[in-house]
Amino acid sequence: MDKTAVKIIKLGEETPEDNLAYWLSRSTEERIAAVEILRREYYGSSARLQRIAHVIKPSQS
Image 1 (cartoon, one colour):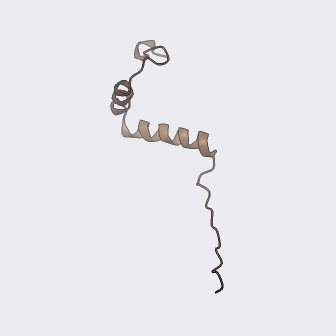
Image 2 (tube, rainbow, N blue to C red):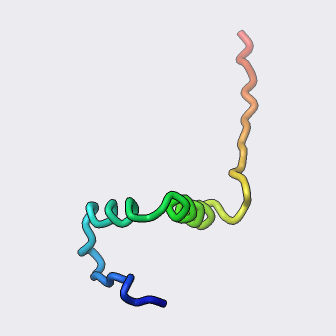
Image 3 (cartoon, rainbow, N blue to C red):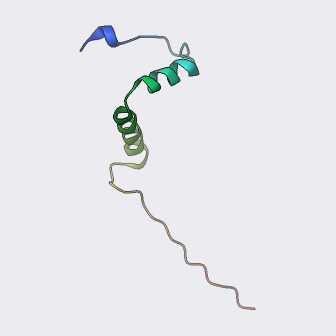
């Protein structure tokens, strides 16, 4: 690992501007890959999101 490319900071020292600058410096492919990693962590490793359908019966007047 090339440690010259790693910036170590304490938790809470990062500002929103630092975060934005980091992600804007990444390529589109790297950003999409990061979103995919987060999606898989949150929803699981399924290829698609789960579909949910509810059948609503009309009220009888």
